[in-house]
Amino acid sequence: MRCYNIPIFVPHEGCPFDCIFCNQRKITGQDTKATREDVFKIIEEHLKTMPICEKYVEAAFFGGSFTGISAQKQCELLGAAKEYKDQGKIQGIRLSTRPDYISREILDRLKEYGVTTIELGVQSMDDEVLKASNRGHTREDVICASKLIKDYGFNLGLQMMTGLPGDTPEKTIETAKAIIELKPACVRIYPTLVLRGTRLETLYKNGEYLPQTVEEAASLCKVLIPMFRSADIEVIRVSLVTTEEISDGGAVVAGPYHPAFREIAEGEIYFDEIVDLIEKDPTAKTFLVNPKEVSIAVGNKRRNILRIYEKYGFLIKIKPDDTIDAGKIKVWKE
Ligand code: SF4
Image (cartoon, rainbow, N blue to C red; front, side, top):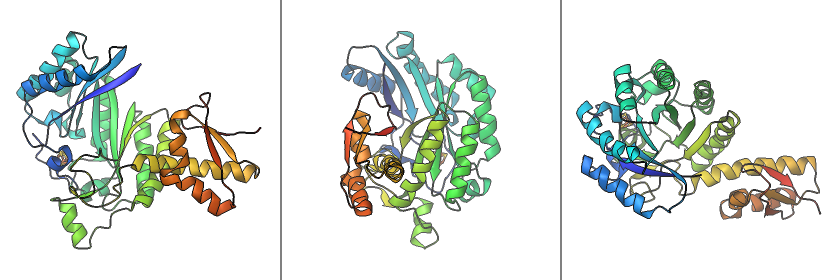
């Protein structure tokens, strides 16, 4: 069944925090306050563009700490989405919030309004990294909130970052392991970008923060993605959504921004697998992958083909095969 997401941005409202990397208005690309009428309008507009077929449609409140806004505002926005859910026009409601903005009272309200998925901005499971990023919550908050969300029967999503101040690849991998222990249904991985107007920008300009390069972030993500996949956790996003703001020449001052970042990270996974297969069988020159992943296996700007050529002195071919699952690769023999 096809899944559709209707994004409804609730920028920075209710968030008294000042995470070092965040300029919420820059991320969402808007700074108006969402209203009930906005929710109706956004859902209507999206529903009109969707094909008539069996589908799972979710209204998704993103862009801030949803459960930090006033209870009245939460009810106003959720109530509008719930009308569509009650009519069967959408099937789910998801939202994102902070781990320390979860309580029984809040979850009771979200249940009443038909929320199905709650995503928590975890960012790191290392208390020192959380402190250096001025997150204002701890690892323990993440653990307690995640357990409570699951006890209530919501789908849990967890969001993590790479390259935060004080973070290291080892600490990031430990964060991923701690997240896996919490058994979320899905994760998002965001390499840290330096955005204009943030405290991270000041640190970067003073030489006190060195962002990851695209290569560094991608080689870390190529480890994280398979860790989650082998734990049966869906990786629903790798890197921020490219918008007018989040783009070269937009609000991104520095850091591992690339419009095809996920493709590069997943291409790295294929590159390692191709090398492994060639090491085991030096005659292997043609490889089969799922038709949807041919371009990922070939690599951004054919980088995998070219690197294999540089390494082994021969050109390989990547062919589509619909019997192969996404993420898998096989040697093709005549
Ligand atoms: S809690 Fe979220 S919205 Fe608030 S400052 Fe931090 S990242 Fe931004």
